Length: 297
Image (cartoon, rainbow, N blue to C red; front, side, top):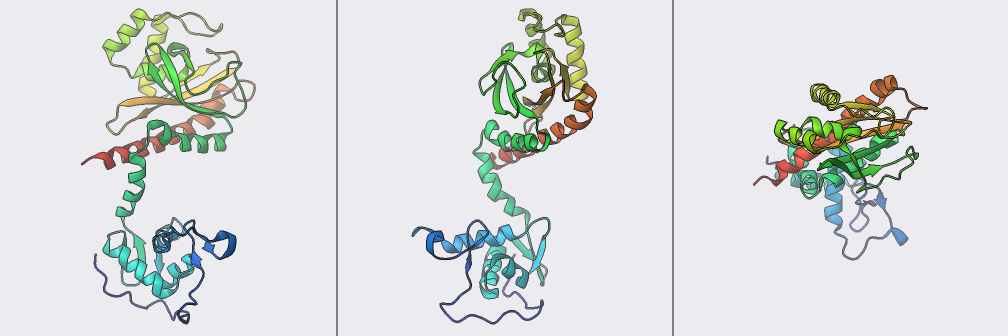
């Protein structure tokens, strides 16, 4: 999209400053940067920071803005804001209807470039942190390794288990919500092999150890898209888990939210925490899909 001019249709702008007396610049973090201790380093590229500030000025509350509004939001002069908007439009990041400006989908590529270099752990961790902040309950991501699950991301709150859990902790898959989610999505031959080789000993008095009962639990988990466990891994521990799928729909991990039985009933776990867990998994899957899209030639 080419823009030769940006018409002044949003009312008169402020008077232009004298050369060398431009307004305070907007910093790379969206705040005006003055002098003194806040001065940027000698290698700081101010024009790049201003261009990014223009992009970041748009958001859910400001999806479209006039030239004057962009200038006010960024602390730039109208003339400077116009130059950045025209440049961004030439590059395909911004569009204009002649009066208002808005971002174009190409701007997503800036984030995709970052996502493309992230591992599952790095993609998932910020989302788990948001979930934990919202629910005030611990959350984790695990993958299947043989007959066990292995924790790859862990964001705890209060300690609810006697055993300390951290990245690398292993538990038998059959007794955990995440393990059951992962087992439920194994191909039939791999699941048969698992049941042939695994040992199902009681960990608590509630642990399901009967192979036929476990198979039925896994069938239900595959149909429903989630698993809930009630004190099967440790007395007092309740958990809900859902799958995390890659861009092709394959289950690559499971994530859970866990709580203590004294605080949350199974009904509350299902009604209040499970929907938020599912939404978080959806957000992680969206980022994983974006990462794969970016990697395609």
